[in-house]
Image (tube, rainbow, N blue to C red; front, side, top):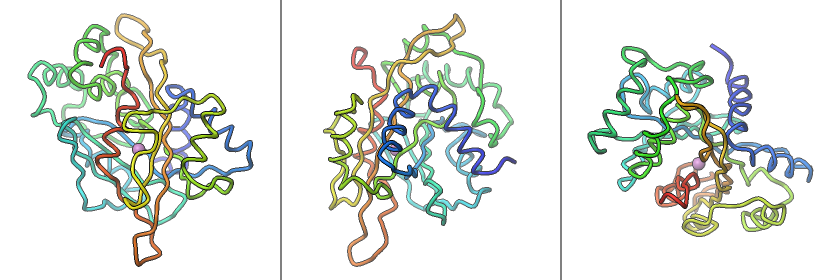
Length: 269
Ligand code: NI
């Protein structure tokens, strides 16, 4: 099995292909002398045997991660998520959500089951996170199911690859906080997601988050290339748990719910 460091490096190379703003932001921060560390990385998948959220998380357990006991629920989007933590600060938390197929329409469920057929009887491994996971889907189905679940359409189109990296604002030295960072990015032409306000969460909730807005990128479909929304780059600032010197390390469902919408196509929703 490859090392965690190598995996993260390769995952970044794949991620920037669907998130053209990420290397731009990275360059802007490095230009100020910052060294960028990630707060968390995130995956999207389906609750099917072999590729569910616990199986994806198990890959990281082999790299020394431990699963937090907390289960996060997103009833409106029909998702559940868990997160995994590493004791070394330089390794990002891992957030894995999955679509609950028993809660979607029978048409959408049948489509996902068809696409993921190659996974029958197999279990996902580290290498699978760095390559395509099934045959390209057809664009008409992508369009058809997008309106029911953007999450399902995105995952069907891109597979179980890393969905986003998140800059840890706590590790930045030249910004007073998330508002100054957002202002700097906007002044440099980066478009941020304003669903639910520019900043999700508050210091009293112990986590503030913002993100870029996903841009259109080429994606391979069974009938050729089409432009669809890729992914976003996220920013997170954590606060200490009152009465302790430990930073809050969880997630806030109502904030994450809006962050998920960074990949929404306004024209379609
Ligand atoms: Ni995130």
